[in-house]
Image (cartoon, rainbow, N blue to C red):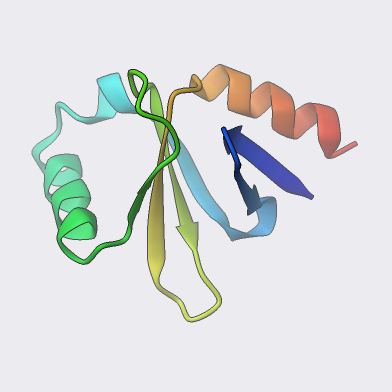
Length: 86
């Protein structure tokens, strides 16, 4: 199955490591370092230029992490996943 992250961005749900609320997790220093490192290595994809609400970490086939910044809330992404994975 695939999960639509917003606009034209879709990821295979088997590649998803985690879906995180950007407001709650970005207060942690570790998360800030992780996101900064991903950005520095050009592994961040911005799905929309609206206010970001979540980020999705995926593991590619070559075992590299890609971070997708989405304007959709974690709860919306979870509902989409549950709806289409049945």
